[in-house]
Amino acid sequence: MVTLSYDSMKPTRVVHPETQHFPLFGLISKNSSTGGIIIGCLVLAGWWLDIPMLKGGLPNPPYMVPNTALGFIFACVSLRLLNGAETGP
Image (tube, rainbow, N blue to C red; front, side, top):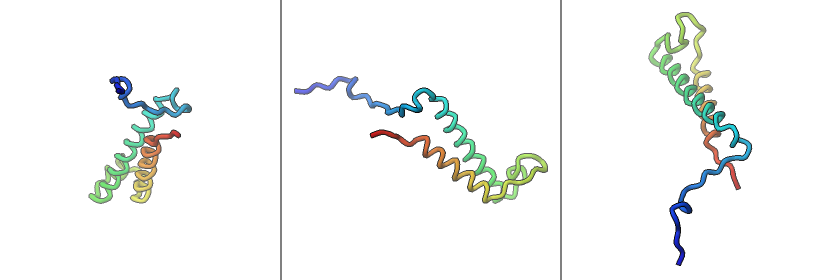
């Protein structure tokens, strides 16, 4: 008869050896990618609703065009997906 203890049932977290010393970098990239996605969505909403403040942020700035905002969103989504990727055998 095999008895399993509670400790053997805990999920183990696989940490890549190159990133185990810098967990703050993962947190920074997660937060910055989330912020970038939000900014890109706000810019697209500004173009869709024709709100100048959301298009550029300041009273008379150069506006971020929708293509750039969409590229910004895609880049931040890819950073977010790469950050959550598990590496291992």
